[in-house]
Amino acid sequence: MSSEFERVRRITAEVTGVGEQEIRERTRFIEDLGADSLDLFEILTRVEEECRVAIPGHAVSRVVTVGDAAEILVEVEHRAI
Image 1 (cartoon, rainbow, N blue to C red):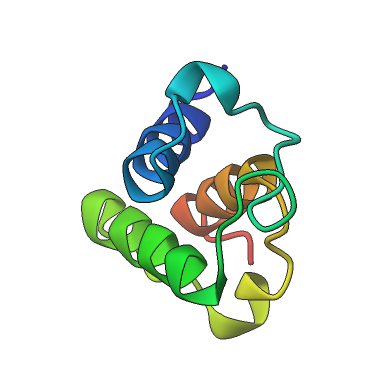
Image 2 (image 1 turned 120 degrees about the vertical axis):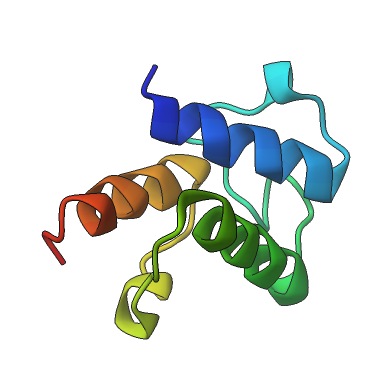
């Protein structure tokens, strides 16, 4: 697994209270973890702060799964967005 996924997974577990071992790349924030829009905002904000990046607003709408968030983080880190 990528270090980006591991970071997103750890932060997601902290915000949602779900164990890291239960979070996979295809785990959906809302349907599977019971997160709401404020939880997702907190997760993405913490990812931005920890990784010292800015996730563009247009990319946020693509985030459905934990893997999506990790993929966007990789893109932002490599300035591919």
